[in-house]
Image (cartoon, rainbow, N blue to C red):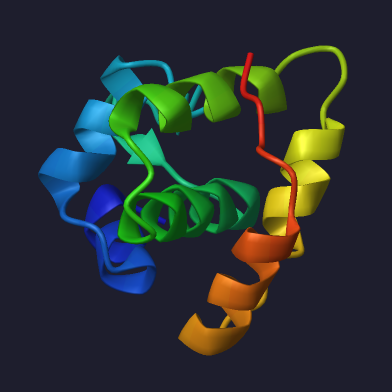
Length: 106
């Protein structure tokens, strides 16, 4: 899928996707013979994750560190598992945060 489709499906703007790519928050995106980005399902899922992290108010620097750790040799750290398991509703999230030890990002 092209960046237009990835933007529509992820809820992010094309400029945001380009920024995430240029800042290293996305794994390398395949390109076709014309040089156009070709996003796959995994790329789209990762864009959605990045969008959700930013929507929680996570600072961009922390999102970048999280993304870097996700593409390293240990693809899912304890911190990432904990973030993945955050409850979705605001009251449940507030309770989860209050009961959880501080998340450390490398």
